[in-house]
Length: 503
Image 1 (cartoon, rainbow, N blue to C red):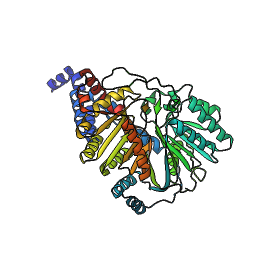
Image 2 (cartoon, one colour; image 1 turned 45 degrees about the vertical axis):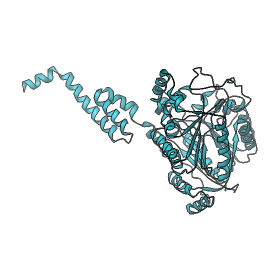
Image 3 (cartoon, rainbow, N blue to C red; image 1 turned 30 degrees about the horizontal axis):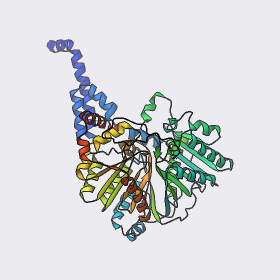
Image 4 (cartoon, rainbow, N blue to C red; image 1 turned 90 degrees about the vertical axis):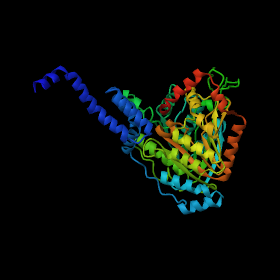
């Protein structure tokens, strides 16, 4: 007994460390094994926890535990939810019949998937109109605000205090002065892209405005990934606008663009500033506008506790066209993976062609597999990307990500400047999906996004032509170009790819 006591006395520091190692390390390792994730990631975390005592467990608690979804769900659970009226719409069987009537019966399984994901019906009687760039989209949006009689709801990620932003402020003020109910929601991070922020201007003009997840506390860093990336404008509950376009002067063709020389991203090392941005936005009329309004109302209630309900915000829908459409909300809360699974479902349904236009392309392993399987089935898969985005580190990571796709026959096209910010997916020239979502982990897992899916051969064909025009002006990225890069570039790109979950 004395020997044991003496041993404990002589080695108490080591024993204390061992106890702490077991008490902290075992629960951390068990959590890493039980948490659903890629098995290789679980093995790496368990190995780190056991091979680097205490430090590994600490690193796992900081970086390995997904608090984003839990935080988002808790925040959403505490917020009031508006109750929009039930709108007359197609039943499931009627929607399937309508899809069969278009000659694309294979897309009926996609409709079933998205219905189960979103728990929303497919709306008939919509009109979808693409608007190219700020030159088309901004005047149409401002004209709609000027024609508003009852309500205007505007949500955006970036709302700059510049030439374009001031035009919207003036239109919103005119609407408010006419007695129209106006609500503006700007993401707290996106509002900081210009100074002084547009929020202060809107407040000075007496326009009701709120910032999504605003905080000046040191803990704001935990909300860095919980951003509202949605772009929604709804006027009188009847006309909506959505897509990928922010409100800023760089979306106008008149904006100064000093990038005139051709850029070859594989060879050139000079990084030039992307000044002007091309984008595609959409005007929507018909019952699907209620999905845009509902997404805005939920975000507004979460931010301000004010419920937007009743015919002022949700009037009876009016038939406006022949498109079948549905809004899809996505975010790190209860809507997690809605768009990721929608994209994968669309890839599995495709028979002839898939065209994807996106400014940022960092697909994770399951998405890469889905794209490869689609291409290997004989489907033409084209991914259209900017040759230089506005985020050079994303370009680096992208170059290290696309190699497995090129091997399996996916075609990657790089468009010349100006920077193309369009977000679009078209399948078989019969189904399309557009909105705020990029093909990267931040959009598909961390941000609050909004897209619209549309079953309409005419609309999908029109957007397919848009994508083809981009392809005609682009250069094809080849395996040889990737393989012949200098070693230091390959290392740089591969190193940046390690940060993929955070990009």
